[in-house]
Image (cartoon, rainbow, N blue to C red; front, top):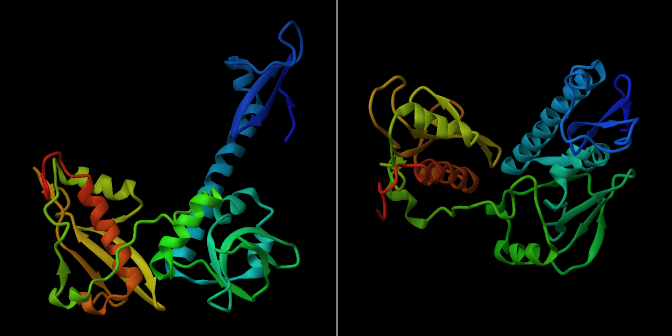
Length: 288
């Protein structure tokens, strides 16, 4: 987007996602201003650009959220859809360098490009760049990726930076001893906060939903909708609050025994519980 006239002697444009101004006359002509005069800041073109920049920010956040949902749920995504959205910078930034898997489990690589014809250009773990044209691909949750450690090592060599956290996402493998817990896991219970609102704010800032006395995270695992829940205390309670046990519910709200929880729901639930526990008061909890 080029520079637009914003009154006598000034132009405005979006520069790195923010509205900038420059003079068109005088000794400063052509130079970007470090501060924007009020008349320019309130000019209709500057206002329009600010609103457009806000829309771009919301659009980019929405793209990241949608791709994150595809990845966490390991949903099949039409290759043609990726090709159609690829020219959009926000979509391209959210998708680039994610690990994708085609029809064959061996068709795995880091996504680098999508052509108009619907082919994907990926870099395989052996370093070879190939084109894939399956009808759909998945962006697997990392707990489902075989050889995750090797993929992470190769990602470092390749200089991979992912807008949607996948390859470096913290994962938790379900232990064989999961059947010992009847209804919940208490590994991250007992993290103390000064107040329940503070604990709820921590959950919200991490992107988790707060519903009643719980912080929740909904996951689609093995085709089933599962909700991980961590007790954070009743709303409006006074005094300190602390994290409770981690549990899971099915789509009907029935409590799931840990032994019945799938690998993705287990990993994402543990990730939520660990993140809430990590925000506890200094000197509290395990290892204090």
